[in-house]
Length: 243
Ligand code: PGA
Image (tube, rainbow, N blue to C red; front, side):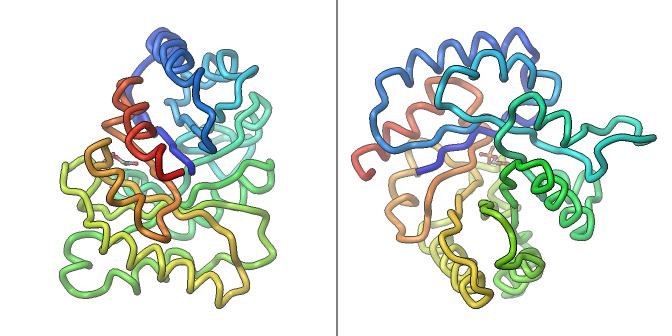
């Protein structure tokens, strides 16, 4: 399984150091098949690279621009993130789409920029509450993944209903399964298979087992519950007997 931590705008280099040292201790006995991935804020990536370089734990950037360099004030270069040793990049997170007005076109360009640097994209998709209430969930998600093709190297998808992110209101296992299954069958029609689909949105150790018991839920992208090493590790512990 894949267990990814999205720290969002939390922690500086010092907290990153302390957190990761503590987490490495917790994870030192893990033998099950789990891939931990951390997404710290950009300022903490060098620290993360240093601490994790001799471990099996992977990491990536929460956001990278689609150009490698140039007059783009405030942006983060995917090329430099790759040089630091990252493996992954988040793209299309709903906070980027909504707060920063990132269009689907930008998401697509950023996705391809990650691929260009051999970073594995985790493409985040999800519907708003209004869209769900109007019965548009599957259609919205299909539009967000429409651009994917079977010519692409491996990538991941994270289904994160906008209404479940940071709200404590988690999707039911059935709601998650319905969307995950539809993502996989849509991709299959395009000749794309074996793409892990993570669920994100108010995941914690108390709700993780029921979600993970669903056939097409392959792991989690965790925000709030990833901000403490123990509560993030507890999610793994809550599902480890199912691995
Ligand atoms: P949350 O965030 O776990 O705090 O809901 C998930 C995410 O935004 O990736």
